[in-house]
Image (cartoon, rainbow, N blue to C red):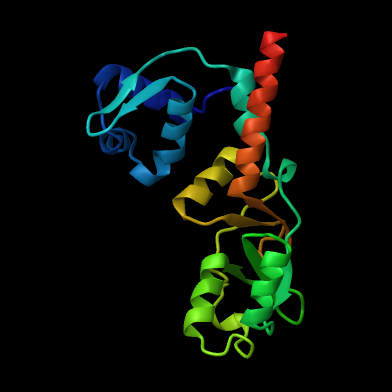
Length: 212
C-alpha cells in the first residue's frame, strides 16, 4: 500500500509537533478536521500513528502488514455488496415489517412506479411507524421512509474502508450501491454485518497462512 501525499504530509507534521491534535493538523494543512478523518483513521490503523484521547497524535512508526491492510480495506465495495431487497412506496408498513423479518434484513429499499430508487426503510423506521402511524395496514411506507436525496450511497469501485467510515459516521446499517450519477438505480447494498464478516474471514485467512 502507498500512502497519499496528504497522508505523508500528516506524518511529517506529527513527527515535528507531536503530540498534536487533529484540529491543529487540519490547520497546518488548510483542510477541515472532517476532511482528514479518513486519512487519520488509515494512519492509526496501520500503526504509523498513535492517538491518545485529549492528548493528540503521536508518531509510532511501527511496521504494518501491507497484505492485511490491502485485503481488509483496499478491496472495493463490489467485492462484498449484496442484492438489495425492494418494496414499492405504496406498500403498507405492516407488509414491510413482514417482508423485513421474512428475509431477515436490516433495511428495505423503496422504489416508485418507474422502479426508481426513492427511499430507505430501516428497522427503526418500521418500529416508529407501527407505534405512531396509527393503522400499520393502511399506512404506506412512503410516509415513514428516509427519502432521496438525503440518503448516503456508494459506488461499486469505492474502497471498503470508505464505505465503513460512512456507515459509522452516519449511524446507518446499510448503504445503497449505485452505478448512476442520479443515484436512482440501485444495484446492491453493503451492510455493517457484511463488512464485519469480511474482515473476520480475511483476518483469519491471513493468520492461517502465516502459521503454515
